[in-house]
Amino acid sequence: MVNHIHRSAVVGDGVELGDGITIGPGAVVLGPCVVEDGAWIGPGCVIGTPPEITSAEHNRAWDGDLTHAGVHIGARAVIRELSTVHQGSYRATTIGADSWLLNRVYVAHDGLIGAGVTLSAGVSLGGHVQIGDRVNVGMNAAVHQRRVIGTGAMVGMNTPVSKDVPPFARAYGSPIRLNGVNSVGMSRSGISDAAITALAEAYAAGRLPAEIPAELEIAFKWWAEVEPAKPLVA
Image (cartoon, rainbow, N blue to C red; front, side):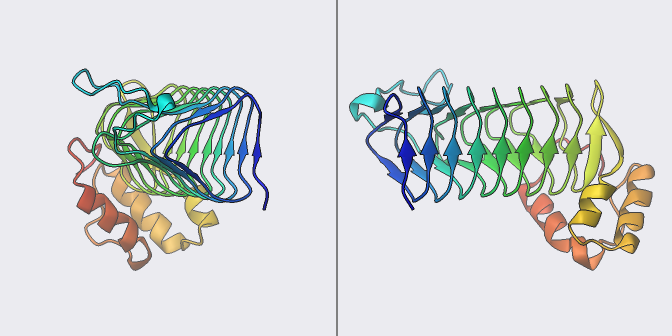
């Protein structure tokens, strides 16, 4: 498939492009960076500038001065206009396949964003944030650095995410609070009513389930391996 790169876009050295990619007017994509097949990068996006760390080198990647750990954009990801994704400082900042970043989204250095994630307009992610697959984060939510949002969770608009959100949870408010499970998202993912009910009962009691339903084991295994530091529930 042919790539469609606007003549006013800047694609720097060290950028590896797949097939069928769109890069809009005025967008800047700097290396090191990998963009997989079918990704769509909108007008005015800036991808691959240095991490916002005071001790990090502010290199001129647009002149071929490649320093940091890179950015990786998965297949068919959509990054809408005016969004920003920074270089990683020790690992590539990653946007998962089939994710949607709506306009004015900010993803800081070393973030790991899973597959099928939706970050609504104005969402800001601090450094080192990790987000599991199929998460939906509402408009203008701000996620504190090093926080973790589990697979299938939903975060409400304007929420300051200062604690880690467990898998399949609904979380919103200021301060952030656990408000049940993302039952619609779970059902759409083929999760059984019995597993949804078991998780809903545990979250209603303010705890993780004593026994994880088999079909949720992968999501909770990932959650445990990430080692949330400040969970909403334990």
